[in-house]
Image (cartoon, rainbow, N blue to C red):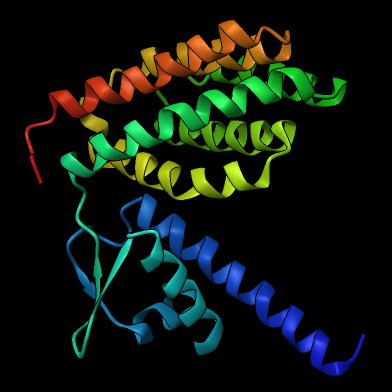
Length: 219
């Protein structure tokens, strides 16, 4: 591999690292919805250079997690109840497709991993951060089982917005309902029960739909 090619690979890796760090800060509200930040702020926050951070910003702006305000900086997108209704409408059929394909395609070691996540979900109780960590692990594993990178790419920003919504309204969440629905879906995919897994996926979306319906901010 040439020096130029190695440099491009390294830059791409740093851009992905910057994206991962900033996405987490957005989702967990460390970057407060509705606040203004600068490119320099994000460079300092990630300790990564300007070019990869700029690439990460462009990706996050494309996903509507940042809004670029010319000559002003970057607006951290507000959490919007109306947007979440549209996100869930789009996300629901894509998640059904993922669990269908995952149920059919999961290898033995992947099915064991799904069962392990379901067990860990069952003992996560009301530990919110633990629940969301397992939720993310489940998404990553389901995408790997399904083997469709285009669906995974389409779902990634929808899941980020959904997790950010969880965080924003965490005080209003009946977490036990979400834990039961996620664990059941993981177990059903592991058993190759794609009909049951799709119903469980719908149940997860229903938990979010009820949360959206119960929020008092129209946004």
